[in-house]
Image (cartoon, rainbow, N blue to C red):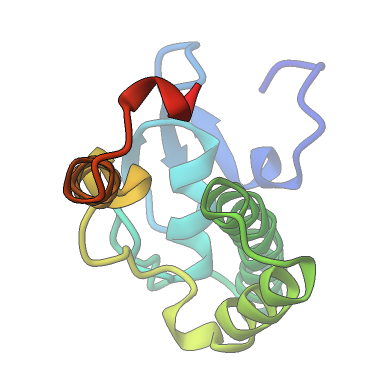
Length: 149
């Protein structure tokens, strides 16, 4: 491959047409489209987005698995901290949920059930209900609305 490649996965593949998106595995000659990310999963045997290589040596498989697990843990830490900060939980709660997610390594490559909706994130309906209750309180107790200002 090109001389500027520093990732360890590049020595286990050959470029098909001079591009970094089409790679051929040196062990099973399978052509992978999608770049070095999918090659790493192919060599590690995670079966995430690509089939596992059947001919890869165990030492290469282990090193690719370590690399992929480290990348996935970094991704999970970032995504969990983003989710928790938007919800507003405490820092200890964030650390605990990260440890639970990473500690369960069997599910580290599985996708989560579904994407949450904006209403679920911002609790828009809850806010509207609270505003209605506040307005009802002012109306039932004959409090002028400008008192809120």
